[in-house]
Amino acid sequence: MRLYFLLAVLLTLSSWAHAGSSAERLHSIRIESFTACSYLILFLNPHQGGAEPLYAERYKAAFRKLQTLVSSEHETVMGEALAGMRYKTAELEGKFDLDPMMFPTWLNPILTAQAKLDSEAAKQYAVAHPADAKTLLVQQLDLDLSRLLLVYQARTFGSLNVSAMDGVENPMQHLDNRINQEFEGLSKLLPDQSVERGKLRRIYGYIRPSLLDNQRGSIPNGVAYYMEQIRSELRAL
Image (cartoon, rainbow, N blue to C red):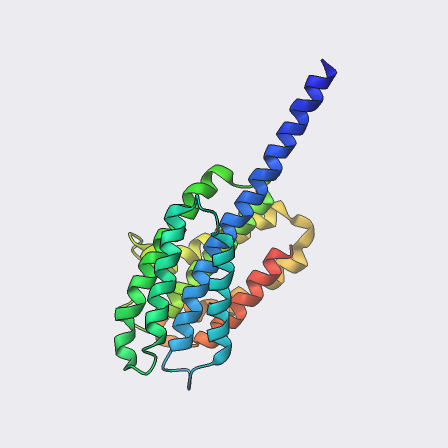
């Protein structure tokens, strides 16, 4: 009887560990897909004073990570979506000398494929999501910050359609509301880390007016820098 009990416990722990690792992989797939699109758009931004090689390396690194993460022969939907993103990006890379006003024609199919990839990863994540509340909330906040960065970078080209936010009337305000609620949630879950949480909220508060007010002008480089800082320190909590 005791042996059966021990086996049941071991199987339960094993299933929890597998679910946690699977959820982490799916979360990483979603994050890297948003990162690839955000930094591709930032690299193409005609208002930043010339193409910055750092941003090119950033989106290419995200694609390399995605290729590693979406490597299973069973991941048909995500595999096809990623292949579409990479194919359309390769096409666009051969046209970087075009008039920037033409870039949306090539970027929109990439964003559509990214939305398909994200949607499938989200479905699987809903089944395998982490068991502990802290990890779940941190990943939700991480994802919303990544969404917000992509929506903000897409402002550069007014005709870009961030398909992952289809159906949301005011994506920036919607995401900002969610992010603030998630920061509040962290306050309750991590009461002993008020210094660390306070720093993250101050950084977000610093860039928030630029995110929400179109009249303040565009600072795509600065927003990307501070978003990366927030997300990096968030994952260290």
